[in-house]
Length: 153
Image (cartoon, rainbow, N blue to C red):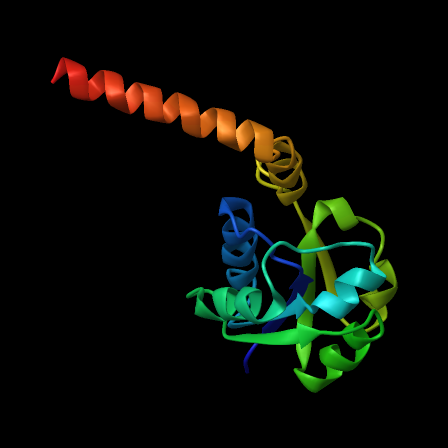
């Protein structure tokens, strides 16, 4: 009998933390189904992804630990997907701890630890500090360094 694990996420700016959680969830069963939040659903949650939904879905579907990537369009979808995919385990990052305990009447709910030192939120914060002026300054610095290297060669 196949043991299906179900999870959800935005998976914006895909990084090693995302890969780690998918790998750990796949190890909890035989089949991993991943709901990727649509841009419209993210807007409801107050999030604005950098990478468009179609690309995030394709990235997640391409991960070797993922058997099926599906669109996540609303909060209520989790219960219907548990039934639809006959999920035995619902897993998600520990930053959601307690939010999905109510699903425990249908499925085993697990919260996995995050990968230390990496988060999409932090990546976005760092990137947001690079406005156009900073980028131009960085480009000028790199051009200067390139010129110095040429002169020393």
